[in-house]
Image (cartoon, rainbow, N blue to C red; front, side, top):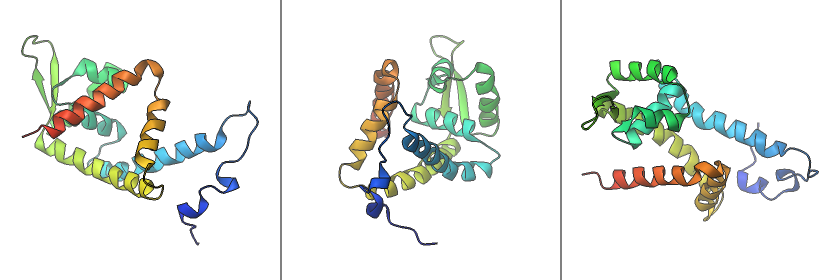
Length: 179
């Protein structure tokens, strides 16, 4: 089967069909489903070798990006129940990917840190996903990163947008100031 390069398909009439204003944006909805499937699929294959799934990936990602994150804050970010997090977190702790510590000022707090083993797995998964993103952005031209970032920011609920951007910015600062 011959595959037409992405650059040759962009801007063609079938790339962005016209639709009545009251009709759902089917093409973008479906493209998001397929893009998500493939984006997480790369990591799913790697995670399966460890007996882990997407929930493990999400926890490990945010614990790695936000060392010392409180369990309560992680619950808010992931928008899951304490019970769901508890099962996944127990596996990650028991297998040496995440370390749980008491809070210094409040011993009831549980602070989470990726172990070197956990950080290595998180970086492997992020590398797989970065490769896919970089390939897609390379096909779209010099403003693709900014355009994709702006689109994704706009997709986040308006009430959460500033919080999410602060979270990302803080994690980026921590990563770049690491000794």
